[in-house]
Length: 255
Length: 281
Image 1 (cartoon, rainbow over the protein chains, first blue to last red):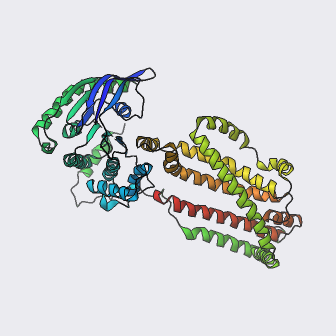
Image 2: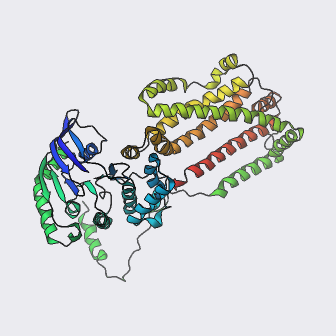
């Protein structure tokens, strides 16, 4: 299933946040959206998943969601959003409960996603016992459990320290290589964008418009940290964003 | 300024070679983290009661002013042997349990409504603010007219006393529920009922339980107050009678029973907290 954004604009009362966006998130690709802080990246994601209504324009789902998809548009949040009183298993089962699955089917899905995210040994742990990286793995497992058509990831690695971030990037890349998923991945981290994105959408500062869409045709498997092409790409993206980021920063400072 | 001289003096000291006459860094951290010391609390009780007993025996404390703990214990044993202890306690417990349970349940229902719906909140909160500060004891005569001099008015007093703090605790607890958890529920297409039942209420439970604790204390206070007006049996009635007869030993025994009742209720709520909020530790 593709997700298409058509002439999308959004404002909060008088504050224009996004202006006239046109974008397609094609099936089986990760589209990264980067931009300076306050450019409306997260708003775009909330609009994509229907947590907010756009002021203008529309968002279309093209094609059918895969069979067995319980929640076609599924989020992974920056701050994990795990229920602290439920175990790892319980947090995943929470999102399966509304669908009236048989207990075998539920168990099959839970075991499958725990295995894919290498969490099987932590089934009975509660979030408080887990590190930040593990919590985000649980959140990713939970998102995968409903077999989403599009994964909407809102700065999923931003709350983690840089080493954990590296590990999780490898995990996400591995997950995609084993079983490609479609995703819109919001980040302010250019390294994440060039490591994971098939397409990188660069937004300008507020009101956010698309400045550029950069296609990266290096397969995910070949994107090691040391790859010089990636470093060059990252540099190129940074050149593009630098002035915008600086101006956005000054704007915030001026209040 | 005296800037230069001490600085000049410090530099050679700071650069003295290792192994020289160094000064150890003085420790100035620590503290400010009270740890549980169970025995201390018990010890305070024991020491106070022992002092009190000694004072009474030595004649420092007149038995008219304050009877010795042993006398109060004697009065308690008399009460127990006469078989009236259970009659008083069961009458009180019955009122307490019915009034508290109804008040807390109704408070939960109204508090949840106020926490979730704008209309319910607009309707309920001004009413709560207006009625909560009224001492329910002042309303007791009215309750007697409405619900009769029997159990009705006593239960109603406790019910009203519990209801308002419960409403406030519940809707403030719901206000403080992490909205990202609710958004998460919505993003996975959980129904409204499921979000309330599986996310909002469990997340609000710590606040709700501390509200229950307050409601429990209020209900014991109101229980005694209500029993002091026209009750044949009940701990409050027993204390009142003892007071009227100037039987201070019985009065102390009655007050001690109330204190024990309060401790028991508190312990029960702590058990509930440990059971339901174990995930916090």
